[in-house]
Amino acid sequence: MFEDSGFELYEQIGTEYYEREIEEEIGAPVQQHLNMREVLNSVKSRFYELKEQVAGLPFEEANHVMQ
Image (tube, rainbow, N blue to C red):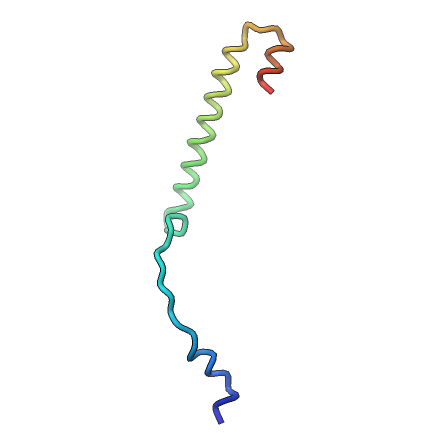
């Protein structure tokens, strides 16, 4: 009578436990945002350092370096 009811599917399902990674933790999006901001600030700082270094070069050379 109950063989065709589909209940055997639920009998086979078990619970799997695993250790969650840091990306899945509750505060992870905030940490990822802070990490990205730190990377962007680092790139921006390097850009302006490079811009100061090429300030005395002719325009074509400075443009080539900055690209």
